Length: 295
Image (cartoon, rainbow, N blue to C red):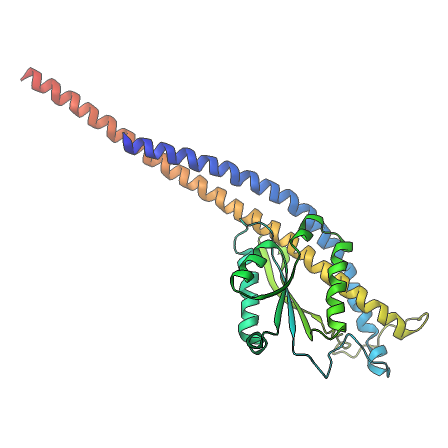
């Protein structure tokens, strides 16, 4: 009977867990729908902005004016990596994958910088900040509050801060590590170079660039577009990460609910077998006692 009681307690616990995971799945699905709409609507604008910058590439290539956003010859040797994770867990390997990629960059691509103490991090999300702190990494800033008020204006403040750190020559390279949203079940781990800016040349087909009319002039327009493009790029990475987080959480909670359902089925079968065995033993005891009396 003690075994039956233990199974009943565990069965009740698993059923409660299934209710929680099922509710969390529905909440994540609702948030995913909203965040997915936001990133899907932004992507065409960001792509068109990149296309315009590619068409204007010759303005900075052919002009004598130095592109202050391009790679510099004289460098300080310092690198800044922006790590985007979530504030909460229960989303599978979402956060662990980002931190693992940051550690890979630290161990391989920027191993010499890390050894000199010239590799620094900015974290967006508590989980990434906690993990990097545990690894004793150099953390410059932490912006976990951004996820509670994710707007372009708030994202632009951080983007402008990154631009300022680069233009002041404090850092030579700024990279972003985040999960790019593909669909609810798939998140693509992505590392993007934020600064210096590298504008792609025209395609291999050597197609002529679009003939724009510039006012006031081409250099001024490109100089205005690059900071705006950087803000949009940073905001797009945040939206991608935000949508990917809810997709990962919905998938994780869906799997947890399915596992709980399967475990409930196994425990129910185990409980019925134990109960049947207990009843059989009681019947055998009654029959044995009756036979002993008759004897």
